[in-house]
Image 1 (spheres, rainbow, N blue to C red):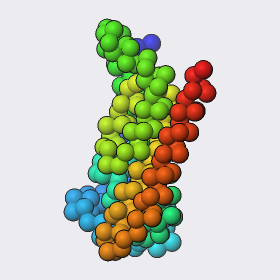
Image 2: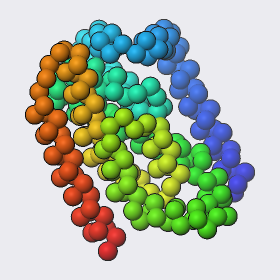
Image 3: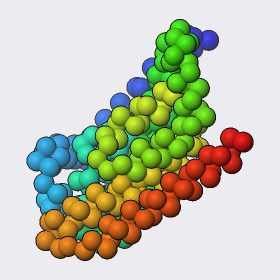
Length: 227
């Protein structure tokens, strides 16, 4: 069983590598262009690059944001801010949140598939880690939700912690989807206003109030599913 699972993981890793190779062969200069773009970290330049895809800009931006969040770097704020510059505040944040959620969920599934078994072996040998692991299954939804709500927290860290814990896929997905609205909203609005030299505190206040409401809802949801 162990050998067969190892074989499956090797096949999966090869399939992922072949996927990247296929994309490279189909669009030879894509990865090098993206690398240079991300290395410079210029949000306005990133927005112009995405906008250059014309009618396909929404799809390209969605896939690019998804990929970056699945990878865990560079910071997603580059793309969430770029999306607000291209598509507007509401539309840009919505595209970013949905794409980021799909991306971190893919990361969760891959990390859990490749590393959860090894983590379980380590956890089983430590009573303290076993208690933490049990707690993550019972209270992980609220913890992940609040963590996702905090702006500028490294996505890769939360992806890894979620995948290696006992948090269910359902709770991880819901916590990430809802939690990313306030954090992505705050990051994108601050970046958008800084670049365009605008100032509208009302938008930040609305996002903060929304976050407080979500925390209250999370408390109710957590009590409901675990009672």
